[in-house]
Length: 472
Ligand code: AMP
Ligand code: ZN
Image 1 (tube, rainbow, N blue to C red):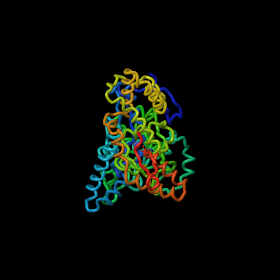
Image 2: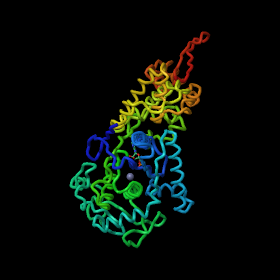
Image 3: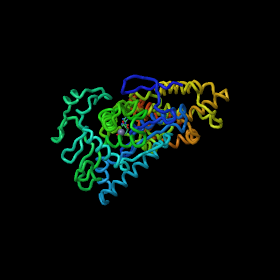
Image 4: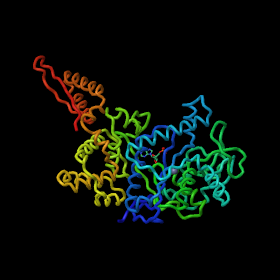
């Protein structure tokens, strides 16, 4: 089995060769825990879960170490904790916020069929390692102290910018933000900074007298180094993290340890947008995982976690993905059509063609089209049905609870009936006014929610009456 992965560092797809096949090591940047995770955050979680499952399949379940951190020190956390729990001491408020948010994150992603990573380190539990990294970088001339900060001196690293393919000159020319006066070079970045009163603080490296806290990038360098070693196999995250976060992780780790790379393969998932637009609070299209699972706010329907996962796998991880109601409706219909597998005993192994598709840089769209092909013949063939079920379980899109939930009666309960009735009433008004563009638009909107309409003429009154049902 040859696994080929696209590497952002080399901009090529190449055969993956682990450093140690008895312990394949992967680090993925996890959430900053101050708010509900949104559906864009779900993408790296699902993508790297598929890779984790594939690595376990190839190298053995006990021969893969997957580390996904929790960032629980961050300025956004401090601000939100003060806002939400103004009556608590800052330290308690922060702890309460980060605990609650991390628990919510775990509950949300468990519904998406995501396996737990082997290690889930928290930044606050690795401050000692961060201080050590700062001291090592100062000692070997890659970092300096200024105004109670520790800063990384990017001019000390000739190939800074290799991952994101930018030269230092270009970056400096483009540095528009006001540069802090204590920085030697405009691209130098913070490893450690002093804390203001009320902010979390620890005793600082390099004999700095005031207590301080780490910068974001050093957190991941410390946690990855501690749990995976100075050089490991795969580092992942969303494409927005390539610069500056991953570039700076690389600079810190390589310069502290004197290694030619931090991780051999760097993988980045593409961005998710919603109904053709960048997701943002101001556009009103911002959607959290929890809203999708627990409310009817996206497309008037609640969406099961496995449906969300299947919808995500329909696009290759490096491509941008457009998150639409229609995509979810289709994924739900696909899972519904697989209900016939309910009593089938799964085979021991997933289908080799699906593994081969995933081994080609996680080609999930191709894996899904193989699944569709299998589903056609599995109706009549018990062996194929068993293999199909094993394959779906391997992909994390099938569990019996979901299939039970997808029966039409249950689906009907997931659709917000009063919302549907309001839309139907608006459609009748439009029809009476002969505004067929609007009435068709409403029919399409309902259709996207999985709601089918049936118009009949009342024989007595001659009025059109509309009934509805949830399509399977
Ligand atoms: P954050 O909490 O913002 O650091 O993000 C956690 C993870 O989600 C990172 O790997 C980000 O790259 C990823 N991410 C954030 N927004 C999106 C998005 N709209 N589409 C895909 N990935 C995203
Ligand atoms: Zn990181």
